[in-house]
Image (cartoon, rainbow, N blue to C red):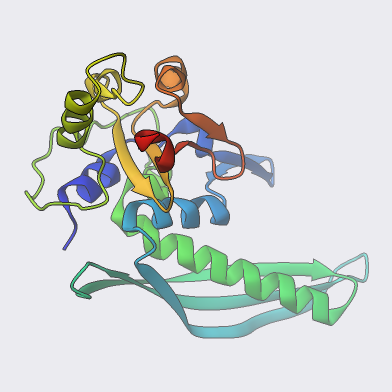
Length: 234
């Protein structure tokens, strides 16, 4: 189902820079933002995935001491991930969201969106650490290394592989800005996403100097290192 490089990307440890913290009832909880999870899914699965809301319903309603409406929704989201032959796998999970607002409409809007986001993230987390599964660990100080696990030998056409790099080097025997061997040597992977090459791997923040040396730039919105593909053939 998944290509070799998709399995490799899924096996990376979660980048601490993606993790957010929220305080509730005097306790700290770690989580991933929904847009971040969607961006990672788009990157790894090359946009070949979608999700369906199979249930969305109100489960509680009350008014708090400030006369705000407090409404809670429950959702079930089903995620479907495809390969190039349109084969797919499905993941499904539940989520809950609460909305607090002065108006009923705004409270319903906030609660329903929060429930869907929670369900979507829970559905994807079954795919591993890149989607926050490790955040549920009761032993947060244990950092597992999944990179030694065997992967299926399936070709990934979107992968900017070392073979691509070698061909480019042969065509440009002089100084080659597309030499990514230094990134491969420190355990990083280069993949295509749309019109850009992006960098995926463990501990990317601490490897930023090596990444920048290869011409990649940091995109604040997507929190990824990228480089336009057109630069590779310039």
